[in-house]
Image (cartoon, rainbow, N blue to C red; front, side, top):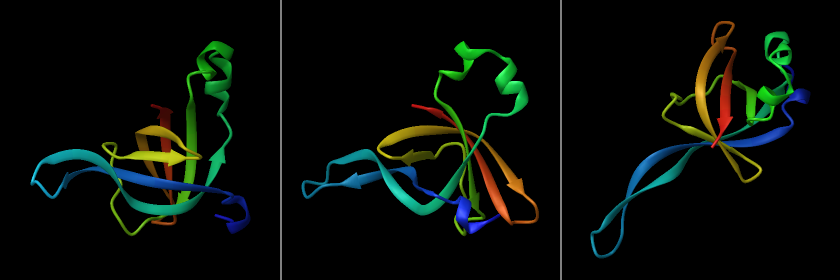
Amino acid sequence: MRAGKLQHRIQIERIGRLVDENFFGRDDWLPILTTRAEIKEASTTEFLTGPGEMDNGRAVFLIRFPLVAITTADRLVMGGRAYNIVGLAEIGRRRGLELRAVAA
């Protein structure tokens, strides 16, 4: 994975419980990781599905392998836009991580 291709700053967030001064709890998204990412082009099968299918906000992000565990319950934020993580794939032997995401 080349460092020059990691051009986009992303943040991985996880749902967590916040407690205010009155001891009332609420769930909110809390950042667990901020890193750089590469946005991968659509694959051939995604390209052949047609232009209507590509407009649904799908994206594939490539990052270096994180020290924290990322799951599909987490979400990704880039440029103020939130994406739900729908798939994870390890690249090589803990070399990188491919995150497939859909705009929330």
